[in-house]
Amino acid sequence: MTNGQLMQAASEQPTRGMPLAFKQTAFAGTDSVMSHPSLIQSVGFHLLPGALTTAVYVLLAPIMMASGFPALFALLLAALLVLIPFELGYLLYQAQKNNRSFSLQGVVLYRERVPAWQYVVFPLGLLILGAVISGVISPYENRIGPALFPWLPDWFFISGVSQFRAYSRSALLATFILGLVVNGLVGPIVEDLYFRGYLLPRLSRLGRWAPLLHAVLFSLYHFWAPWLNLSRILLIVPWAYMVWWKRNIYLGILAHCAIDVIGWVLTFGLILRATL
Image (cartoon, rainbow, N blue to C red):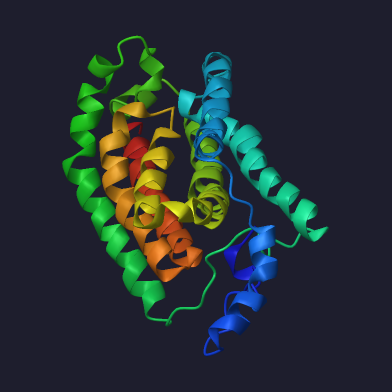
């Protein structure tokens, strides 16, 4: 599940400089593999894994809290048990269907090469943008979240580090380790393969509007934190356009992992410090 092990799609590179007619012939096989779901189907593929994950989260949270773990631990478990298997499983299903193997060639697209410096500059730019948005907009969203969604239980919201003082240090460390793996590494890689590598290219008929629609749907997919939609969309729009423009999902994977790992470490550093 590491992005470095994914092979460059053979149909994405070798036809540069070829005559147009030859290019059309060379890409014919790829077009046949790359199915284009309807717009309604695409919306469903964007939202369904988030809806299922949130449903399991709601079921697991009371059980986990009664067992001495924060609700956040239940969300991570839901992602591990539902979100990741759903998204990765669907990609592998498509691979078996189209390639009769587990090769993601022709299934996960946008794997064109870019200059090495872009793997630093573009993710770094998104990381800085994410830090600005988190510092300026997210705190306001977290404050007004309970008022916007009064029907949600209190444990749905992370209002501050003080709410974690009720849990043991071992429970918090277990949450941190699980989050580092699920939220920091495996989850972002699988999400980018599924959303930016599979779903975004199949919105290509929308032209330049495809990344914008994709960004909105990807934000809405986070049903477990609906009050953060504004900040998410502001970050995901340039992220989606970057992947779409450069035809390279690895830029998005690097940015996603960096943002989530750094954010997770900083957040849990504050939580563990406040619970000493």
